[in-house]
Image 1: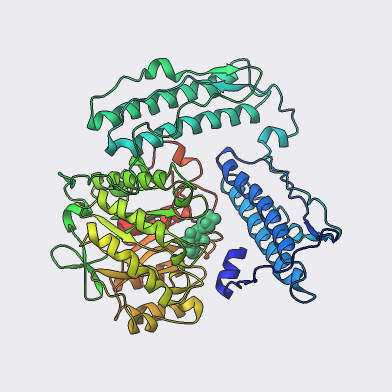
Image 2: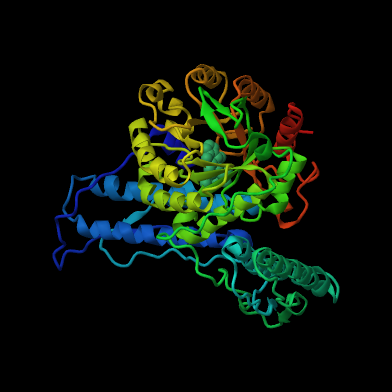
Length: 593
Ligand code: IDC
């Protein structure tokens, strides 16, 4: 079980410490912390390097912060002050960080055991002195395989220069520019991990050739994207797709800027609204149902009929950036016959807070793609850690102001303002909702808004509360639904009973559920999932499954490697969980085979 979940369920202890009064006298040595090295003796997959790097650096930040606290609290507290107020919290933070490193690597390779338990505790250098720093070098696959990294060739690709990009196409173009970089990183990684493999033409046939094809397609997609709203440019795909080898190795030149060169929408002036989709595909969920609203305790279509929407949640858009695209959404709509995609935009963990413009553009672009297909889109402000949404109110206001401005004329967007509040009271959640919903309503007065509930969207159950606290003090806006999340292998009959009861009094929306435990991993429990989905069907409660991704965890609907390709339809690309949910949506009966 992961630490963040234990902490969250049990309630995270907050250590409040006063500002240090004592200042060390010049000759009195202030102790410093002495933490063991976290040694990465495993290959870090290229896709996870940035994440692992960030967490390694965080270990040093934590050490520096602890030293700072040691300096500013000299003489404070009782005999156990340092242990309780500094070393203890440091241990917890390190434990969580080391766990995150394991999880990141585990997304694309075997999950390593880095000994988080053994390496999280730090000692004191009683006499002061320099703390040993954490080594932040991320070992490459070749280095860990024991082969000398020097001399491994790298690819050298020509720059792709893009001129003006129409605002509507920015997200798409940015995504493809970033993809050019990913392709280079992946080719370099393959060069490292295949040293000595194959015959004389191996590198050409197995690495440079496929890279050329991918670049060609990507550059073409950029031309096509720009051509949707402006004159189609000729970027010289043929000339720029082939790459050479830096025989002696060395850093590959960066292929392209990752951001399209036009001004990104600023937080002050939201992008102009995209015109409402004309020609929503006939028979599509949006064409059939139109603008949704909440009627009584149900979701209703434009004709006032209570309906149930069935769909999928993405995984973190930052974790699986290639899994939600025109191809996968087309499969979702036309092959699975699903009704919606939930766009899980994490706020922390490498999400929105690290690049507000980039993630806002990304979400806007994906909403546009869903719109073209006639799918509903749920814009999920995926807070998780910290669990109190009030910690992110300012970011939320800016984000929703932008996204609603861009899609003010759409009839297919639902806004989920807080994924899974935790460690916060219903009062706290309501306070946040009262500030964010008016921002949404300003541009998008009729959209349905989903409000996360206490205890990881458990209607409070995880915290020992239940739906009654919401009934006693509901959110005072129209067209609001409350979210409930379940993970079928963790949550069973007792929670189903509460949902059955609450559904009679509150409009509920299951914006996320899993067929496994709440870790998102482990064995699927399809029997329990059947019972849950039958209950939701009986009560016309909409649902979306976690997750449209191709990672190692059992929640991934696509098999590993699928998102790097272009084929998303059919069952061959699906995992057990993927086949189950596709079948359930398509036929009404889940089937993992
Ligand atoms: C999990 C992901 C996992 C990731 C973790 C933290 O599957 O790869 O490391 O989040 O970011 C939720 C959350 C959802 C969780 C999911 C499974 O909304 O973010 O995803 N889950 O643990 N609530 C209950 C379960």
